[in-house]
Image (tube, rainbow, N blue to C red):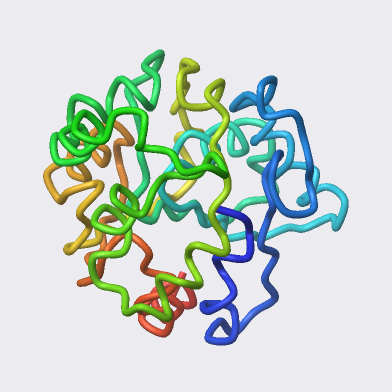
Length: 224
């Protein structure tokens, strides 16, 4: 997704908000063949440093579970809390693709059935995979908005090894999404265990909580 996917949430938040475009999307064009997870971390840190932000609640969604820890290790002093919204948090050294293939059998089954058709002509996930996984609780207008935010994901990010180690003194919250069809509750529980020491808050929504229930997610974030 581009940072635009956070637009429905922003009006409900009480404080200033920065929605980051990661490399290869939005205002950060890049060669997707060379983008890595470290580039994602660098992009977030660029935003923090350029605006000299402090006391930040850094919120990540889905794949951002591999980005937030890297930011925290390098810029701990700027952060108040990390919030992982249904994030993939692989064990140290594992890739996102490997862990999700193991823990998300429903997605794996659809990928196997679709074969080459898993991607559309623009390189993004086809609706046949993306909507049941990410839009199971969205209406047609909401899903149409999601499609405008979707971009191809670099293979170097999905296949690269991860490091989820966090500063011990940094508070972290995991928002568990109870209707999520891509990262099921059982999968999210494993991610929470991999993260370690997180406060867990449940939200009864699918994967795109910032679009399906922006007011509820905003209230949760404002409380932190």
